[in-house]
Image (cartoon, rainbow, N blue to C red; front, side, top):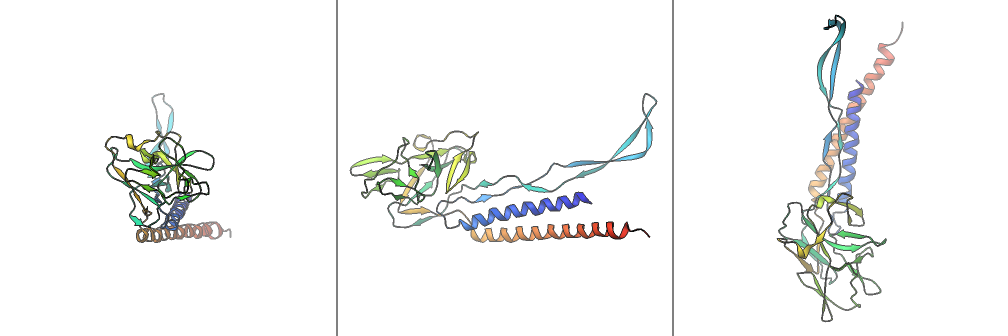
Length: 274
């Protein structure tokens, strides 16, 4: 009986975690460049149940050992294995703001490959983002909307001197007759990146280092100035998934309540003396 109790409880915990991820996706549905998270569910390892027989079977030494009869396997429920960002390209939205930029990813040499703007966070560490909602700070540096520096292809900050600039489809920032290449990084396996907050990604400990996108053979991409990439969240589908997660949670909750009533009867009625 208790095994079923634990299985239903695991189901409730998994659906609660799934609901949290879906809610976060819905919250960021209007965040430029946001990549929705997916929550694959996995089953815990199966357990083999055996029954010990009352009869004894003699072995080769003449002694007897209890016999074991296999009953079958039992599963103890599911869990959220991990949250995986979905790097599918989002639609574009024209803003008319010159500091807004959208990465448009074309063909990639690797099935899981993806491109990113290269930025520097507040601690000076290199991070990656798809959110091209940039601005210019008081010193003329090109930054993200959170104040992180946007880097060029050599890892240096980009100073605009507070002058108007244009960005070519190849990602060249044209400033007063000069061209500064935007830092565009390419990951052959986007699953090597993990979310770091503030619309940023960082390389996982065992991930392969990102390359300069311009040097990757077979990679096609372009930059659209005055545009932003929308979040790739399907709001209608997300609402449907949230309702499904809620109903699954509720179903497991009713199972737990039924087990609780059964245990109450077993303890307070069946085992009653007199």
